[in-house]
Length: 143
Image (cartoon, rainbow, N blue to C red; front, side, top):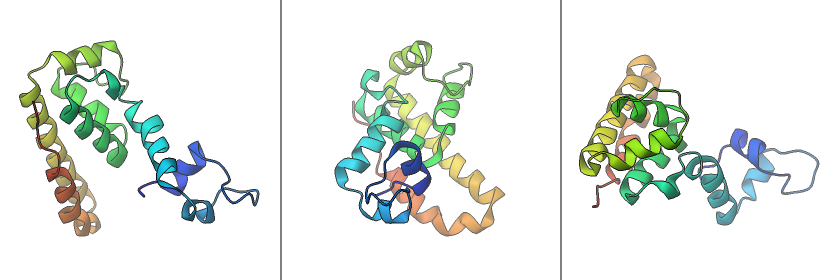
């Protein structure tokens, strides 16, 4: 369900009650467990409830889930902000006051470049490119 063992160890609990958090606990994850992880660690980290455009919120949160802090740092750069990787009021104001269609396109393009850079620096990751781009292409701008 997209929750890694490392993430579950950080935010989860011993689902099978055997005294440790391991792959056996991951196998027991429910949809509600996965949604809780996404909400607390990705949606809330981007403060996505405060982003006025749903399609912007979704592409940012998904990128954060897939790539970590770069999904905050790179959009901050796009917006001409200090790229501290922290979503505060300044970042939220910039996201919400930008032209939303432009911003979505810029985030989309930056994410494509990010994928290309991963592959350039780690050619063994090329096998994932098609899937990564398919995932990205699911994020359409909606006004």
